[in-house]
Length: 139
Image (cartoon, rainbow, N blue to C red; front, top):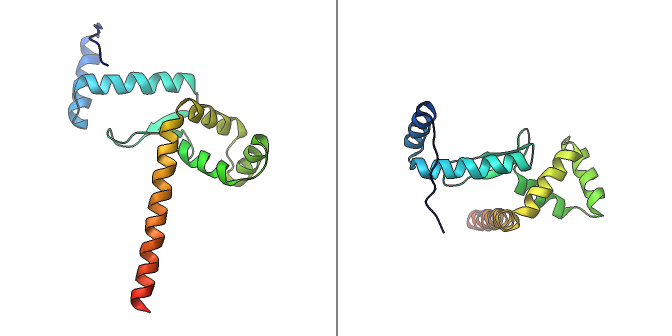
């Protein structure tokens, strides 16, 4: 539930917020809310950034893949959590510390990450079915 909150913002910040909100096609309030949530998450999880359009933002490592991609790959690997982290670090050249930050973010935002992993799985299955149908059509 949204509640009314009052903030004092200097004119330069208010103008920049209004210009960016207009460019993104959202209200200044919606943009400010997104910036606050993402900014706090970035403070809580150093190395995490957010990518994508306003309607489909996703957490990612600053110099790496999306968090959901890291979690999806870790789920595919065998072994303890530390063994999986070591394997992924070797495969990807990601520092284990960054992988742990992604895991911590994912643990705190499990529903968001699960939804992205599931969406990707469903898209991959759809692509495989379409490829099989094309092969059958041309056989």
